[in-house]
Length: 286
Image (cartoon, rainbow, N blue to C red; front, side, top):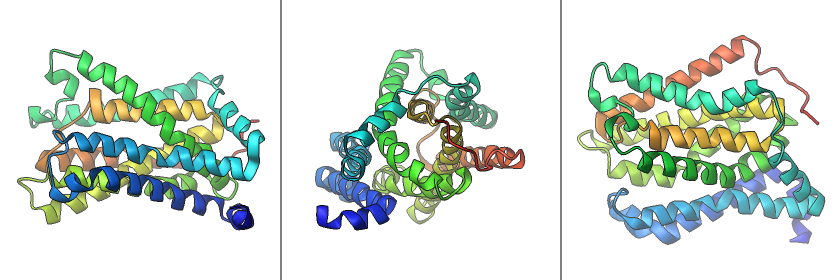
């Protein structure tokens, strides 16, 4: 490995993504290939959840391994220092906690005018705990392990060359593609009654668009705070809102309508921030 160190130092972000995708896709396929290729229902096949857990190993393992190789113990200390950096303006906490749930709820409530199927999940059940508790736990755990990679390693290096908008688009698209196997499994058991040739492309594009827009907003928060802790919280709020407490429909035409509308609102937010000069290059907090 030491023989390749100059090459890794020259292309750290590229190596990071190659390693992340190799670990994540390899782990997902190793555990869940039978269910994925058979098109079993992701909601009832237990191997789906295990495959997702295997996929989550990619970002933190790649980040920690490359940090050790490139920076040693000082690099790890710096990584966890950013993870413990929580003192920052209330404004950035508001962005981290509010953006995802606000747009999620607003989109679904507007769509629910036309059909109750669009009501947020928490309004369609009397038992709130099975939504709230897993949403908090999965959100924090998922945000933590993923952001050790995306924000812990890739984003600071990209911000040395690009502004928050460009960095967010690069990382956001790759973040969306990283979910491709997971989205494929969900899509092949959720498309009916829409033809899969229509459902899957719209699902993939709208989901990646939403993740990219949200990542742009996440990078903006990070550039102004340099807080990995805050990025974990912001990521957790997205998982909490979109997959659990305020989740929308998950099948057929209603899902496609919701998914496209949610992505559009996030990009409207990005455009609003851009118009106000919110993506001008800033000096990172020290």
